[in-house]
Amino acid sequence: IAQLAQFFWKLFQFRPLLRQAVAGGKKAMPKRRLFAACKNPFFTGADQSWPPEQVVLYSYEALQIWAEEQGVKPQPQQTAREFCLDLGERFPEVASELDRLSFLYGHAAYGTRLPENCDLELVKQLWRYLSIPPGVSSSTAFEKA
Image 1 (cartoon, helix red, strand yellow):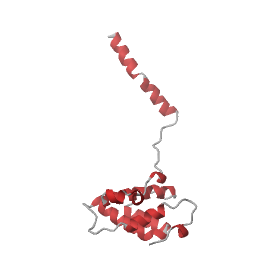
Image 2 (cartoon, one colour):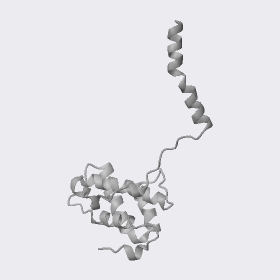
Image 3 (cartoon, one colour):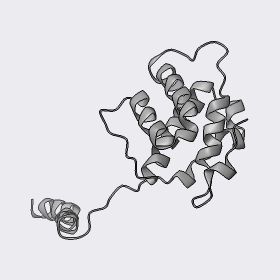
Image 4 (spheres, helix red, strand yellow):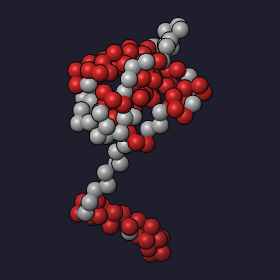
């Protein structure tokens, strides 16, 4: 019985140390994803291999990350449409692209598929805008096709 008790004591002795480290030290925070880690699916060719729904869902996720880096944090109660409308007011140069993305996102996330003959050109243009390096004027770097 003593050996068995010693076995379990050795087995679980590290747990109080972990609790102390978390309680007394720095708590490990989940790393926030950066927009720079998001790859443009139209640049990488993923738009040709992924289903269009996946391109839309991925683009919306990347948009949320980008927006947070711009100081606009998505609110949990906001729908994709409300979030994109809010962003469109702050970034009017891409309001139509944001509107299109929110429309497609509704179909991709909550429907069974995107509408027939779905055109992702405005989503592609949105990616071009989001990819403008910080400090570069959007009016010179972003031209609508």
